[in-house]
View 1 (cartoon, one colour):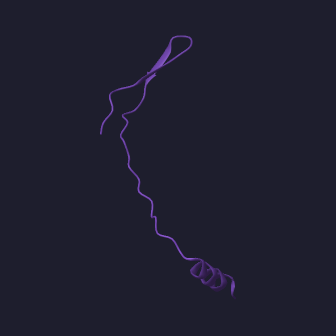
View 2: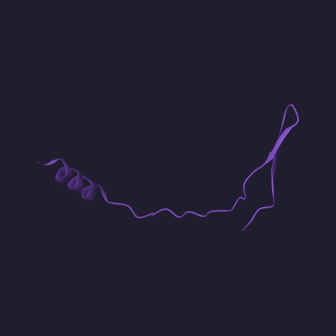
View 3: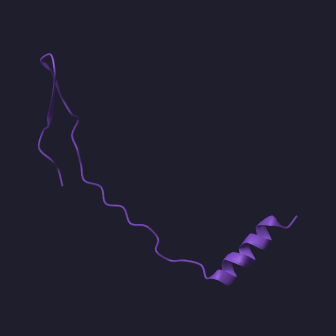
Amino acid sequence: MYFEKVSIHLQGDLSFPLPPLHRVLQEFDHSHLSAPEIEASTRDALSF
């Protein structure tokens, strides 16, 4: 999706156009670890 041009108007007759804007969709990983998996991976990471 492309948005129409946008201009910013500031005090003192200052104005400038913004660069072209695009909509971005981001999806996050919704999987998760169980409590025992968290415990095991934490122990593995902390063991020397």
